[in-house]
Length: 301
Image (tube, rainbow, N blue to C red; front, top):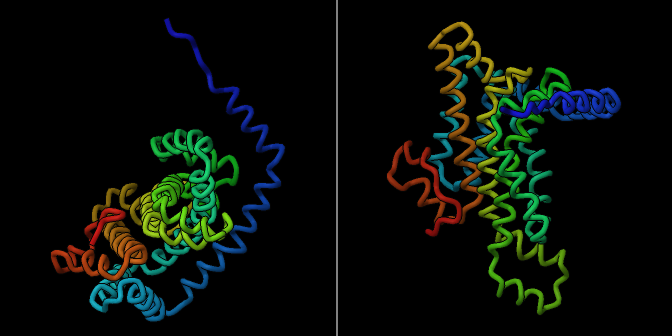
């Protein structure tokens, strides 16, 4: 009744591709691992915890301009240290920073190109739809083929999984810039590059920051799965709890990831808002629960 459709040729072609060009992926792996991830992870793990907490507090205050939420964020990370998971927190943070930086470097330029071409947008959006609906486990398989089991495979799996929101919201933010503003800037003789850098990107900043926020959250959601292919960090604690049926261990790792998510989410959202929106987001309803509440991108104060 059914025609047999086999994906064996796809697997064979993929294996041959890796066999022929594996040296390129090995070079990328070496640069990414030894040039970025390992030094950053060593720096974070060797830094005194009080210094890391101080830096996080200063960054949070710069984003929110409020001491209360800044202290709450520091307290969240301090609690993770009280769980005995500080080193794993630093490993996860290093993995997140490298993955997010790669998403930003790749996603924002693609979003800009998509915003400037309707034809490219028509091709890109279905691809992004497939990327967002594909089960996250599927991303792990090709990464193991390309880079083997380890941190680099985890980074690229996270990047592929977390990239679509940033491309979408960069495209959306630039397209939503008021046409009259663009026409006024053009009438004054601005070049396309000046228009992009001085008009469109600044006005699209809330949408782009919302995209970065969503990318970071999706990357953090991938942390637990990434440990299955060699990533270190808080996901190891969760998987240990699952493997050994240790409810306390799994809950400890899960709570630590949630606390890290709260800190990252609030800080990245605050950077995408003006002062009035920050006050409304951080104090609407009052108390720590308001720190967990998510504001809609582009919400008016």
